[in-house]
Length: 117
Image (cartoon, rainbow, N blue to C red):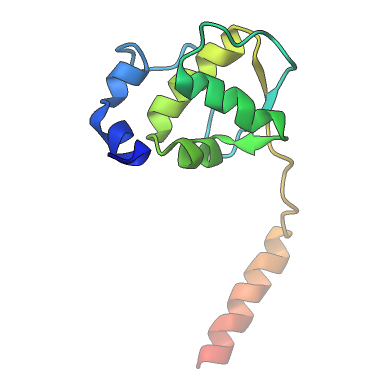
């Protein structure tokens, strides 16, 4: 049986120890997660150890981590909050994207509407 098929047999609540909510409410889909260093990983579950390993290479978003682990985002957030609480990870809000001015945005919408007529 492949590793992916084996993982599908494990229920998400087993991965989180039965918890459905993270201890911290700081994670959204684009929150960046970064490893804090080389803390001992002894005692971490395989999923938590994999998250720490993934984040050692640089900042990853919550949704990217969930994708790498093939786990639901809610389950990933619970695991991430545990790792932040233990000092293995830290979080950072993503850099804000350059937002066009409201006037410019409305002008672009108006121009698009006119072009479609």
